[in-house]
Amino acid sequence: MGETLVFKAKNREQTGSKPAAKVRKQGRIPAVIYGHKKETVSVSLDAHKLAEWLHHGHRLMDVQIGKKRETAMVKDLQYDHLGRDIIHVDLMRVNVTETVKAKVPIELKGTAKGVHEGGIIEEHADHLEIECRVSDIPESIIVSVKEVGIGDTVHAGDVELPENMKLVTEPSTLLVTCSLVAAAKSAEELEEEAPTAPEVIGESKETEGEAPEKE
Amino acid sequence: MAMMPKRVKHRKSQRGRMKGNACRSNFVAFGEYGLQALEQSWITARHIEAGRVAATHFLHREGKVYLRVFPHKPVSAKPLETRMGKGKGEPEFWVARVKPGHVMFEIGGVAENVAKQALVRVAHKMPIKCRFVKRRHSL
View 1 (spheres, helix red, strand yellow):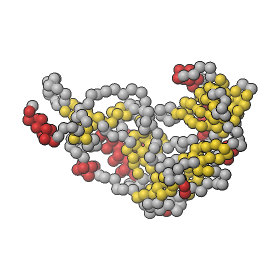
View 2 (cartoon, rainbow over the protein chains, first blue to last red):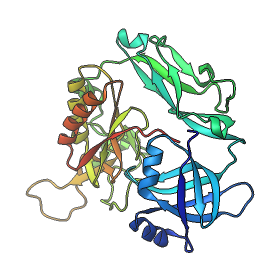
View 3 (spheres, rainbow over the protein chains, first blue to last red):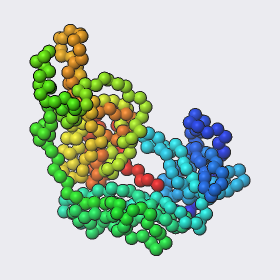
View 4 (cartoon, rainbow over the protein chains, first blue to last red):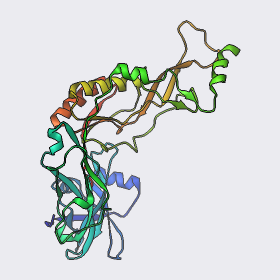
């Protein structure tokens, strides 16, 4: 994650959804740069270059606006309703040496003991929030699940982090569980359980039974 | 009998209309892979049940299938050969309102190719175009 690439940013004079849509049509992504108690700047970045950069797990970039160059970290991404395309990027000004909080994805490694016994691994959280120097932010945190048996859990506090990183996420946050798969109910079983008609809140059973007679 | 709520506030509902895209349930949250709706539609309880059966049957008790849709809306209909009027018909079936982007089914605990094959079978049971999606890791 330490690598950086220079993105040539264009200033956006107009803000709002319609000007932003126009920017997207031109193959650029609207972005905003903030932080370090400086002015917030609305810019746009090349969509293809940015998508490629993020796809490789990078989060740090140099943004050139005119003659000014700033180092920024991707703080937030917004996707469209289908989760396909990036529609907006939040960039935070950083110094490579400063300490920041960052969300880092978790990567599960190994096949759990419980999986061999017929269980499945369920991932309840897919990232950890850590505090470390910008240059030390990893692409992912590897969590070994080799020793996880059926009924075992892995919490955020159980993850071993390098010395230069501090866990920000609550240590009791559940990350991974291993459980046996309950047999799926057959259609017949579900049919027996399901009510023929739902109960109407506020209507007693007696009045429900009487209603058709009155008609 | 297919899926339906246990308790409801009103027995019958108006048809309503579906505008826009899904603003919630539009990402894979529980499993690792999902089936995302690309169109808007009413998904009946029978569609959901058919999809569930198709997925569980294909997976042979491996992995876990998550249903992210539930038929909350009653649809009423008049009996055949009935004259118009005399009030609204009786509830016939139950539907879930699905907008583009809604992740309807999710699968976890199996390999990607297995999940894909299972969800393709589910997609065949759906009345709308769907696509296979993976869990997107957050920043």
